Length: 365
Ligand code: SAH
Image (cartoon, rainbow, N blue to C red; front, side, top):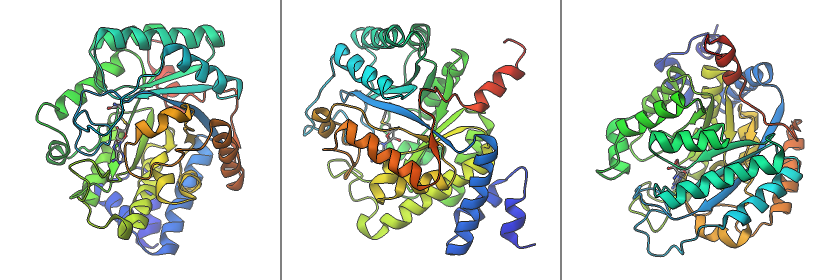
């Protein structure tokens, strides 16, 4: 049996196996990797794509992440916070379109007014949907009581990326007051508040090695996460990391490919989790999103933020969908999903099978 075939047959992938997979370059071998991951996806989570309507509620942020276009220190960003009523109207629109689930994402804010604001929106979404809707939050590091309040209001899921598990790399892309251990603690808090927990990393950061990425995959497996959202790093011109990868145009395709390899590796190693095919993939290639599905992802997060706010939420350069109306993005998405021979799970929350198994296996439930 070839080395690749034997790795693809391995039940419990190790660092070296993952490094080999992440280093593949031969197109035929890459296709075998993606096909193997796709087979695991079809078996474990099915060929149904679940939608999460993404609302970027605010770009106000207290953090200075060195990679991020909406970092607090970027003076060229016009700051906005969408009125709660308007967020709810957007969520209702997505619900009426058959999106069973919504993600509220934003910059990081920990002030009381913001905590109340989010709590009110989450409660309003449940009222609007007869408590049927899935609500995911992606609002950064918060205190335990905040996570609890939002959980009680009805948010069931939370996405908080570890960004990278290489501590030195983590330190180099953040500022001194942001700590890796604090991030880990937040992931623990979310778990103890009984969220479905999602994490992820940026792929292709300057100085990041295949071994780093392999360890990222194993981190997600060992942490027993329910959901994964990750995407290639794409530089933003107004950040300290603008030129950190040299001429980005030259490496765009490699960056996309690395993103796809990571999706495949996570699918092979974690099996029954939900994995998002993220906007950053789409930014790197016109079929990035579809290719993500074919490499093992099963979740799409169409942006349903009102178009007038989109320019304010440029995490990286070339973020797609700036002028695209929400209606148009939905139709484009349907076509993408049909093109890969899958269907959209409309009107369904699409809870991660991993979470269900984890809960039914635990004595406390
Ligand atoms: N404030 C929230 C949401 C942050 S934006 C939080 O901290 O969790 C969501 C994700 O966008 C981040 O976790 C990061 O992984 C990603 N991101 C930010 N800047 C990026 C860039 N330049 N390229 C690719 N991804 C980026």
